[in-house]
Image 1 (cartoon, helix red, strand yellow):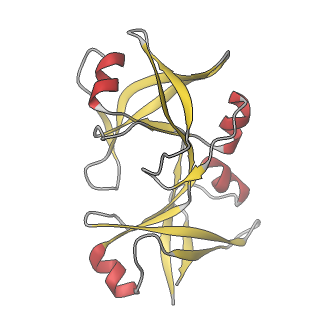
Image 2 (image 1 turned 180 degrees about the vertical axis):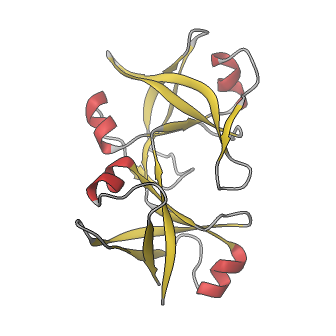
Length: 186
């Protein structure tokens, strides 16, 4: 079966626990813009991620707060930082790398540095309709000047908004723009 799905390009960002957020910021998180995934938003808050003497400034904090710290970067970012983080599903942080998060208020060193696996969000009723389960691997076909087929993981949640998430490296490899349609093959 084939289904159209919009691709969303995810730039580097961080998810923080309440404890770490409070060590880095004095005020409550402010919504810059809502994301399609229900309840999630890009905040106005940014920070610096540092590994040794290498750093990336202005990394967006995504809300709401979570029970774990997760720092999502691309392979390009990893090369800039001189590290080789694992490619992981969100929340799978075992063996992830340590990184220092910095703001004018302070700094915190935490694990959680990963390259996020490509994934398609889908809610539970759509998953049943399409015959897929959380963690399944499916294919996505990209048409265009740099066409191809890639494997992606299914991420099922009650409030999942149907869309494909790729990092900037994947999007650039296929010349995809945020919001372009691709084909999900199940």
